[in-house]
Length: 127
Image (tube, rainbow, N blue to C red; front, side, top):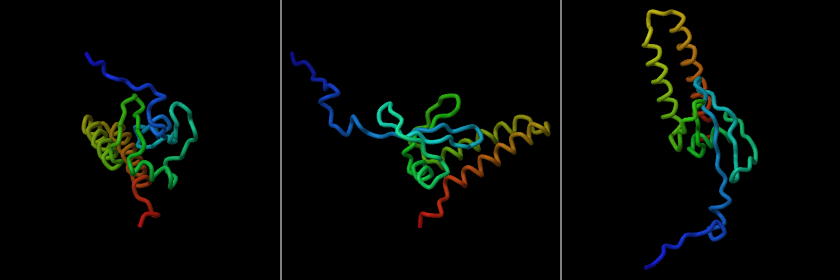
């Protein structure tokens, strides 16, 4: 009987052991907290999401986003992330259309989401 061979971490290619990964938290208002660049568990640096580098990483889908409640949004284009967030807010807005303070609150959040979307998705440096 042949026993399947398993590889130990020392036998894996060096690139697999030392691959950088990026993650950030997406808040309910569309803002993105600083992106963490990690090598394994080690934090190398943080990158501001609205910076040229941060927005580029987000647009290319290299950043794993997590919502504040812990749900992972992995490798989804940023435009789809914002579309989904706006849909959820529109649903919340439609729950109580007769309540002026409710509507004002969710319209304000929707406006903030749209501002973050414009800030992170459009890049004047890409031509």
